[in-house]
Length: 146
Image (spheres, rainbow, N blue to C red):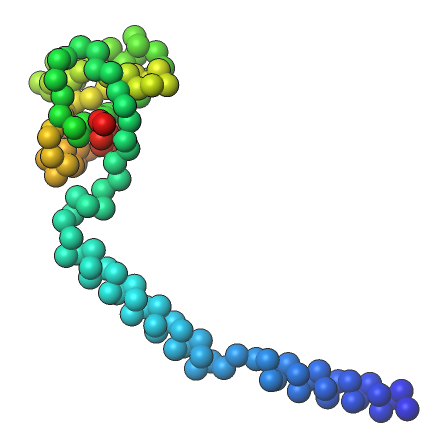
């Protein structure tokens, strides 16, 4: 009786598991649909401007040592200590960049080496700077001054 009950239970569990098992074709169809969607998104991204996908951090800043700046700024350093920020700024000024300092609302000093009215120009300048000074400024980023 015990054996019959165990055998029946085993057969029932096999039947239940076989019924719940997803088919390979279902996985394949879902994979192909996801891949198609990914390809479509990639194609759409290629059509848009290359600068549309560039990460930009928005901050309200107070410019310290120049009168006017553009909206998009190339930042190469952030410091809590103004002396350290000033030293990097002076190094970049000596290298021929119109570097200046700005301070955000949390007290961080930003060392900005270029400022532009349009995002594409800022992205291009950042990329050139990263290439020229690699790896020193590989983490340079774009600040959107609002």
